[in-house]
Image 1: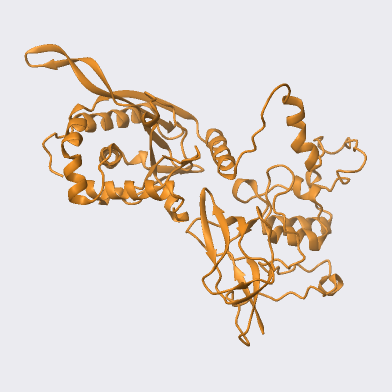
Image 2: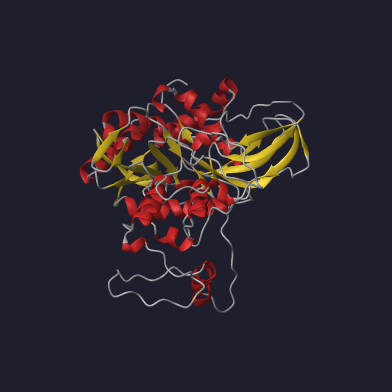
Length: 459
């Protein structure tokens, strides 16, 4: 018999953690290699994780809704193969019966913590409020006697202010040496009598217990005949991303309109032949993306991001396309290297991504790495919109519904009124680096590209 550790797999370049949605096996169940063990979620994409070993499930180390870093041991399988090697290569095996005193270290010793969590370590990653702590940080906190109140008050240098291994080790070291900042000093546990702030320490409210923090807004704002709907995981992520974007980028939105009559008539003329010839439908989206890509090449600053005081101009043009899901949520799959695809290639990529999104078949990487985003608010009948920028991009363009309207046309023979297919365009951009002149110029350039569409072009 041998115990094999199953790890949370790496699912993309920038994906560092995943949320456990559902365990499909329980301890004691048999499992074969490549059989699905659990379902996970990364950002807004759900995935299945297969087992890398065959045997009996020995234990599951995390609960549903726990957030687990990539590379962490999530389960153990008892196999019939002697001397099996753990996939991690150097993952330590913890003895659950080992007394805590055996691993205690002198106060001057800085432990080299393993990047895995013992089976008896806390499994709940989400603490009071919306702050998350990795299993490693919770393991160090438990080993060093750092309370949850101290964790809540601890400043974090990680992504979105999260507490990292370096942060908590520095806190422990400062605590031992007596140099701990006043703001991070441990308070009396939240369940005890309320504290009176010291006259010498910065006065800030003591953290409330989780139950009080979660229920206070509800009890103060809900009354009368109402229905309370719990946000699903995707909606919570969308809400978090939207608020973060508004807090990060000063949004400015510019508007214009374009005459897309030539484009509409060309599509109506070729759509049957296109589907028969290419085996894929031709929608307006690839035509819009084609025009956007051409303009990005003329104005590359639109295809950038901000890092502190630096502007990072992206050489790759990866176009995100906002896609509505059947449950009403939104997801943004990315067409990578859109500038290297012709119209047929764009059409197939757009249709494939949209189909995968609607059927929950997107891979984690399919929503990563976008450099500019297109959203079609006209799909739902809107004439125009003021979209929110998906971070860390600096611009997002919205196309409205195409409507027939009487407009004035300037000709060599004079002005005339004609029925034309008109569409509004709007673009929100990050005013930290995109000024009104560049934003309006780019938007107008896209409008002109669509307006000057060649009605005689071949497929």
